[in-house]
Length: 392
Image (cartoon, rainbow, N blue to C red):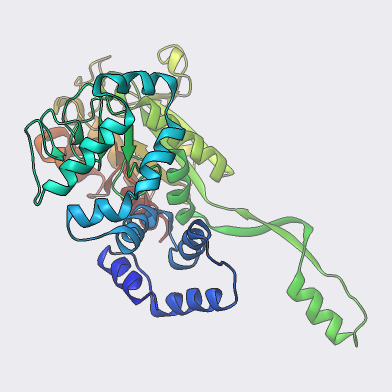
């Protein structure tokens, strides 16, 4: 039972084991769900998927297992029954949708034409004005253009003209190569957590209470212990302005996620590259500079350092005195990065530029060399790799 679902999950590269499949079968035998597809979906996902990044892959495999038939005719006939087509579609149509259907003679005419195409069509079709397929101007299919029709599937560019959509996916892709959001960033940052117990004894020590109660012959002996707190110290340095203006939102999400995850957090700003001064307030970058030497003296080598920037600039801004676009720097930016690398053993650079573009920018190669190739893309996988290095 459910071996085909297990095979589909493995084929979709969801890391599921036989132990988890047996747990799902045990849950079904215990009657946790019965005759309800939505409940079964939620139960199976909770048991079989151990990481949010695989939700999208699980949904695809689940859909294939329960809905996937090999050819278009079988799939559409099985997935769109007669009563659903008429009653459910008509119930969900707005007054505007119903008015739009009049150009085809109404909902009945649209469905009759759809069923006729379905009965006649024997193979995949693209383009044209009649068959169910992609592109073209047929009222049935996906990615084409028609004043109104039924969108089937999710291929091609949408025109926003369908009066009804079949198989619309409503869950968010959480795969590990998509652009990150605040929630995804938090999940990745948790790999860096390092808890320590400090302060007053405020938390109940269950194991200690059981042990001391047993030692005292059953007389309750409550034991308390200090609360566990995140002991990681994180120093963030954000590149702002210029080409980073397009990355403001994702940087804000990263900053917000870090503030919620780390008790010991400090941050500074720079433009393009670091020189003799950093700032805490971007609006007063020239009037309220903080000496970079002071930053290096203030924070100890136990701090984790994360630079966030696209590393895209003139190569001279890194390699030459006076190379900065905003002022005359007495020392090259590379020298300041060397000082950071010498002071902080755990230092990485997070780059929002897609990794496939890195090879085309000379300055990115320079920065990667300066940070010991520890540059990571700002994807969920990239953040996790970076946090894994910092946590070593």
